[in-house]
Length: 103
Image (cartoon, rainbow, N blue to C red):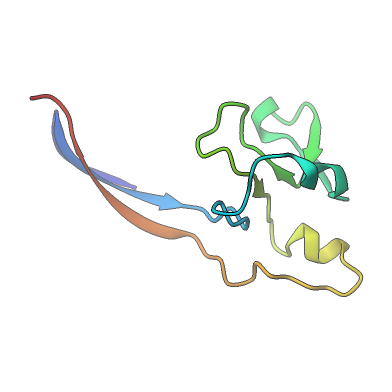
């Protein structure tokens, strides 16, 4: 990450992690949660509870699409008897943003 500039006129370099879900197709219906066989610790709740590997980061997240928590091997692939993974090409990527505020 990097932040340059002055108040009201700056640029930020961020690292965007992949969701492993196509946000153009996800309607945020939550049906995927019902069928996901993998439980992981819930980072949002300080690991005090569990959630499914497919999740929405928090209730009011924008965009509202779900994401898959992938740590090493995709949990969906690990649970799949055919070991199929359609998400293998996704990688974190750096993005530059230019932000302007004020007059």
